[in-house]
Image (cartoon, rainbow, N blue to C red; front, top):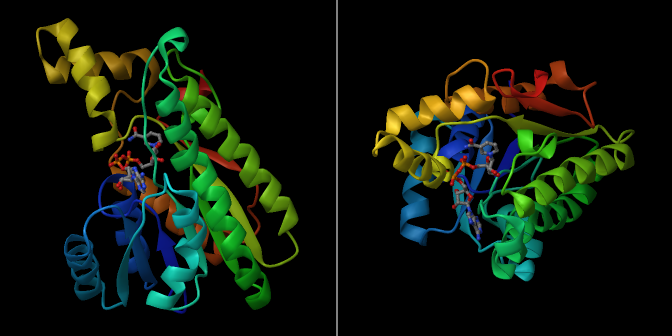
Length: 260
Ligand SMILES: NC(=O)c1ccc[n+]([C@@H]2O[C@H](COP(=O)([O-])OP(=O)(O)OC[C@H]3O[C@@H](n4cnc5c(N)ncnc54)[C@H](O)[C@@H]3O)[C@@H](O)[C@H]2O)c1
C-alpha cells in the first residue's frame, strides 16, 4: 500500500514511534527511524524492521532539544535513505507539576521536543513533498492537544500548539497533494506514562494495576490502556489514499476520553 514511499518517524525506537515505524514498514514503506540512542542500538532496530518487512530502513540520531539538530534532521534522513514522503513527528516528553512549581528548564524542554521540533521538520520536509506533489505529515499530539488536565502546563501548551501548527500547515499545503493531521492519543501503554502510574501507585500501596485502573476510571471510558499499535494503524490509514481528503484534523484515539 505504501510501497513507493519513504517515511521519517521521530522517537521511533520505542513506544508509539516504534509501533508507527513497524506498521509503516509492514505497509511497504521504507523507514528512517530517528532516536537519541547510540548508533549501534538504533541501527539494530532499523535492521530488525528491514529484515521483518523486506523494506529499507536507516537510523539517524539527533537530540531534538537542540534546534539546529531538529532543523537538520530531514536533510540527514534523506541522505541516509531517500527523499521523505511521510513525516511522523512523534518524539515527546512529559513533566507534571503545579504551575507555581513548574521548572523553567522543563517548560523549555517540552516546548522544544513536543512543538518546535515539529515546526523544524515540517519546514524542511514540505518543499520536497510539494515538488513531488505528494506528502503525508502525521503529528502525534495528544488528548491534551484538545482538552486539559491539571499539572501539565507545558505539555498542554505544546500539544495545543502542535494541533494549531498542523492546521496551519494543512491549509498552506492543501492544494499540493499533501495532508497534515494530528493523532490525539489517550492513555497508551508506553514508557512515558510510567512516572504518572508510579506516582498514582503510591496512593494504592504500590499496586501498579490499581493505579492504572484508577487513572483510566478518571478519564478514559473504555477503561483500557491503548496498545501502541492502535496508534500505528491510524497513522498508516492517514498515510493511505483512502485518507487523501483528510487534512487539518486532530483525530482522537482515546477510548472516549474527549467525548465526555
Ligand atoms: N503514551 C501515552 O499515553 C500518550 C498519550 C498521548 C500522546 N502521547 C505522545 O506520543 C508520543 C510518543 O510517546 P510514547 O508514549 O511512545 O512515549 P515514549 O517515552 O516511549 O517515547 C517518546 C519518544 O521520544 C523520544 N525523545 C525524548 N526526548 C527526546 C529528545 N530530546 N530528542 C529526540 N527524541 C526524544 C524518545 O527517545 C522516545 O522515542 C509523544 O509525543 C507523547 O506525547 C503519548
